[in-house]
Picture 1 (spheres, rainbow, N blue to C red):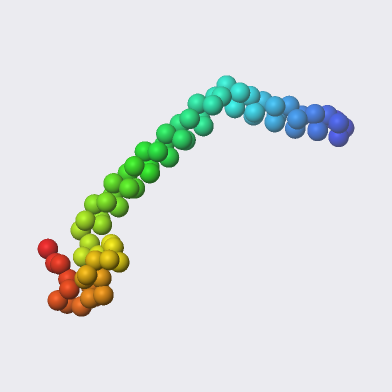
Picture 2: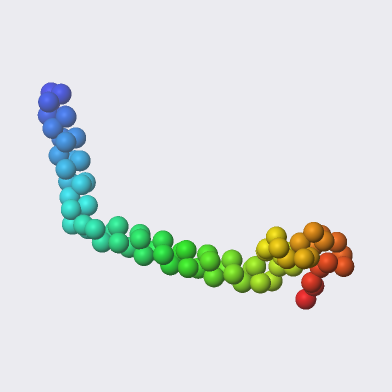
Length: 77
């Protein structure tokens, strides 16, 4: 076995490995995009729930923004 046979064997191995991607096509890409959208929705929904529970004002124009860290400025539930 010479080096040419060795390199041709590696090339054949790579060609067989990449045939998997030809069979899958764009379905893998589409599934990753959908997973990203569902993950973003879940993240934003969780963030909305946590923001509703927090006692820190989310807007700078909120009058209690300057005193949110003081005990009387807290909105405890």
